[in-house]
Image 1 (cartoon, rainbow, N blue to C red):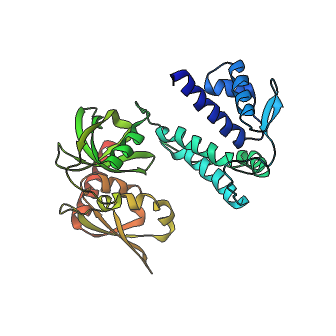
Image 2: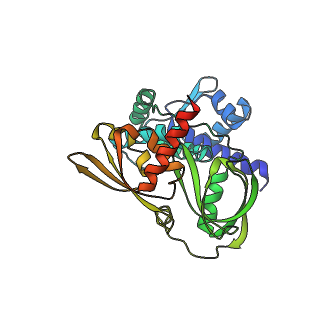
Image 3: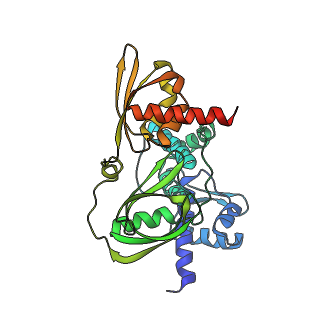
Length: 317
């Protein structure tokens, strides 16, 4: 079976999915999507008709499936259909580009099994849903990075990555990926780095090259949350008393900076953190709401915060 024939089979199957997922499909749109001529689309549609698929329409206008025809026979409620659309909007905003095309294909398959009335419901409602959220711009140099990572986890094989650090140093690492996670507008890899002989987080947009190897993992790994919550002897307990009126502004950031406990008191909210960023990251974050917070412990954090404030004051005199 030659490549041309295999491509035609794949294209004809994809056209059937398109017909099942939309009320009407134009030949011109299909030709553009599959990068073939309109005449080729006409022949593909004829192939589907010869196979017994009940297609309604004519060349030059649009095609649709006969109402009531669907494969496979799966039924969804209107609430489920609306939840798909909302999820699709979320994925468009927050998914990594390497996942976006795969999710779009998956959603087309979901749409293909919907009733005709539900397809119209989607058409009428999808432009009324939007997600307004700032997202940092990333310059991904390769689009297949996350699928490659997930494949390596499933197959338990090591990856070789070329990685650019925050100071623009480029190094080659051999890693064993535990999982991926999204936090503060970036995707990260949690992995065991054989160079450092320890677990490290790698920001996906800083991966310049990635390739799977045939080398198996050197050890077994648990769930990704086991490693993100992993404590070490360098971490210090920090306690703050924060005024209640600003707690809404700390909803996301407090977890990022190591929140482990939160207690509501008469004088405010007592927050307990576990962090190893005591010299730079944590006190610089604390500056953003320091006039609404009291440091309960440790004293070293008070000293460091005062140093930063003094440096800021001297610099802007």
